[in-house]
Amino acid sequence: MRAVFVDESARGNQYYFFGALVLDENSANFIEKGLDGIGQLLADNVAGFKNSTEFHGNEMFHGEDAWAKVPVVWRVKACELVAKVIERSGGEYVFRGIDLVGLRAKYARPYPPHLLTLAHLLEEVDTRLIDVHGERAIVLADDHHSASSSRRNLVDFKIQRVPGYTAKPLVNLIDTMYFGPSHASRLLQATDVATYFTNRKMTIVEKDPRSAAAVDRIVSRIRSATVSSYVWRPA
Image (cartoon, rainbow, N blue to C red; front, side):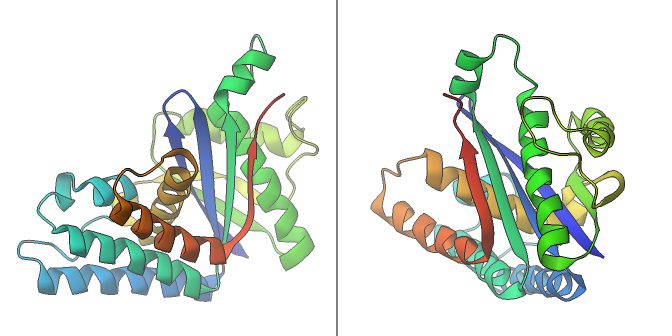
């Protein structure tokens, strides 16, 4: 059995994204220990930094909240190291997105974007589980405002396809969708970093060439672990 760690990301009213790390026991253990090690590295070199600090892509990039007093060089290094851990873990990263402008133009009353993107993501994960791994998996996600609706809709996705949007019911995902706090899960944190930077690379033109180079290096490593990436742009 595998575990699927899911995180969402948006770019204003233009795009909605979901990313997932599909992990077996060994890759999950590798990522957890890897991020713990990075946390300790920063604690040893940055005054006041706690080794238990959450890795959160947006805060790391912008130097906010727990990352506000971390020098830029160490924030960049931490992001690159997280991406390297993902790359070397043996885990798989799946990314799905939807062009919200196109969705609103095509459909007068579209399916809720976050649930639609989640359906697209889980459909791809479900297909890989049986076609590539011959295993089933449980799904874990960060606590957020739509936890109850996402959990309820996963049950629906397992019974029937999303009319007009997905091709088949989901049959390889076990039970329901489980939600927990990302600050307590290095695996959800790794998924967050991967999804944030994949989003950023697709949707932002960096004004600072140093930022552009750093994002390129980070995303290059994430892409090494990416087995499927697609953004739906309704005609």
